[in-house]
Length: 78
Image (tube, rainbow, N blue to C red; front, side, top):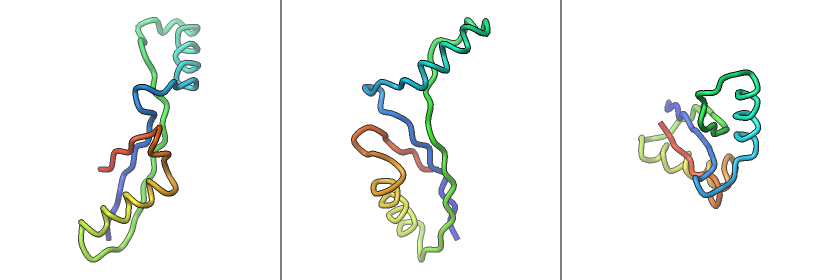
């Protein structure tokens, strides 16, 4: 069994309007030291595979086809 921890966020060149809204709300609440917020998604996927390489390949396919838009969102697997 393998556990993949997947973080999906926007690429630096993509505008993150939700992150901007969160940062603005923090400033309104007097958290003035906050300079940037990036909003994202987090997934934990447990799967059975014959090897770590097979598990990684399957998770990459799942990310590219379902969990993330590869044009806008890089994925980081742990």
